[in-house]
Amino acid sequence: RAKGDGRKRHHVYEENSKYDHVENFIHELELSHAVDRGELALHYQLIYCPISNTTVGAEALLRWNRTDHDVVPPSAFIPVAEATGLIVPIGYWVIRQASQDWHQFRNKYGSSFKVSVNISKIQLIEPDFVDRLIRILENENVTPQAMELEITESIVIHDVRDVQEKLKQLRAAGFTIALDDFGTGYSSLSMLTLLPIDKLKIDRSFIQNRNESLLSAMMLIAKALDLLVIAEGVENASQFDMLKAMNCWGLQGYYINRPIELSQLPDISYKRV
Ligand code: C2E
Ligand code: MG
Ligand code: MG
Ligand code: MG
Image 1: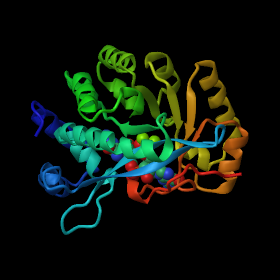
Image 2: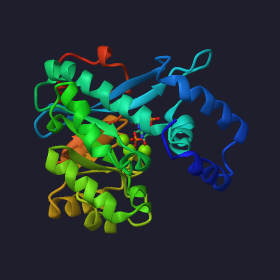
Image 3: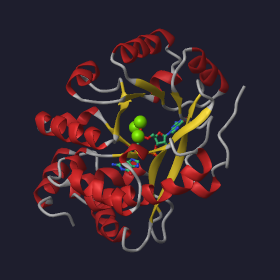
């Protein structure tokens, strides 16, 4: 267990009545062994750029192959991992694994390929997060330019100055920052002035509604702020064509590929006409 997180656990459980306490307790016990038992795995979803017709990156999505269970989806264990502080050691495992995997990605897709990793607020507020992240990449022989960090706007529930300072340090070191699930929070627009970021990942709800006027508006805002846009949840050809016609920089979703193991990804960039 990560140091100093015992207090938060009870706090979060009390507030979150939607979680079943017993179920969570069992997950928690088992999750604390998941790294040691080798039960965690990363699946990847490619990010395709229709402008350059290349695969520009992939997002790492965590999977827990719990012994004697079906695969546990992130929605069932990430909240437990965050509430207990276990997300800290698990998060470092994800970063190390993604760094190791990058070498294979580079062989398949070229050296400008970026691997994206989701970072929760609990991880970012660790005092030595930036140093440890840099050290892990150094050990794996990966430059920060090869990694993108995905954060959500819920990150500013914590000390905004601390978050701003950390993100600045990370960008100065060479990491890029993407704001995930953009448009779903309460104050998405003010986040754009608060947080130093490089990319916007538009939440899949906007792609699935095919809300073209809202999507164009978001892309205009992104352009004005010099941010690249990635559309999440591209599920079919009509969504793909619409976004391509809008000059969206990056496309991600089941239509490109479902999250799968690295070994199952195609050897060359997707080429769609
Ligand atoms: P996210 O970062 O927004 O990741 C995108 C989610 O959308 C993934 O769900 C992905 O499988 C799903 N998705 C992708 N394309 C499509 C599509 O075309 N249609 C639909 N309906 N869904 C699509 P997943 O893998 O269940 O992950 C859920 C969330 O769990 C992630 O949302 C992220 O917030 C969190 N998560 C996953 N891995 C990690 C991790 O390593 N660390 C942390 N802190 N959070 C993680
Ligand atoms: Mg993400
Ligand atoms: Mg997302
Ligand atoms: Mg999401």
